[in-house]
Image (cartoon, rainbow, N blue to C red; front, side, top):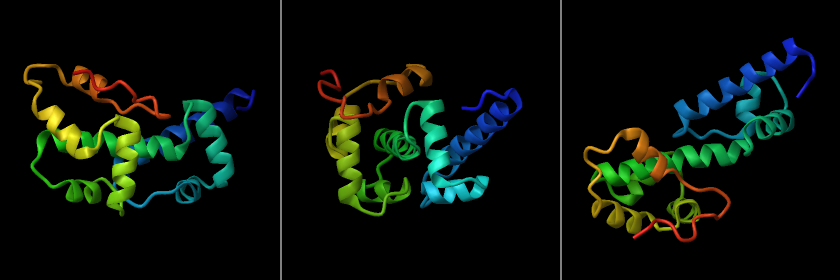
Length: 146
C-alpha cells in the first residue's frame, strides 16, 4: 500500500467497492479481471492490494460469500442442493460440493442434515453467522461439533 495518505484512502475505497460488489453480486459470474476492469486497474494490481488489505484473495472472498449463502439456504429452504448451487453462482455441482466440503468440513447434504438437528430459533443472527461461517484453507477438520 502507498505511503501517500490520499492515495492510500483512494486505494482502500476502491477495495471496499470491490468487496461490496462481491457481497451484492456473488451469484453472478464474477472474476478478478471483471472486477479490476470495473475499477480501472489491472487484475494483478487488484489481487495484490485486496490480499494485502483483507488477508485473502479476491477468489477466496467470493467463494466464502457463496458458501455462506449456500449454508443459509441449506438451513432455511427446501431447495435441492443443485438448485442452491446454481442460486449462489456455481455452474458445476461438483465444484460446489468440493468447495463446500473444503470450507465447511461436510458435504452440502450432510451439512443440511446436521443443521436440521439444531434448534437455532431464538439464537441471535450474528451468533448463527459466526458459528456457521465457513473456514478457509482446509481448516475445517473437526468442525462442526457434534
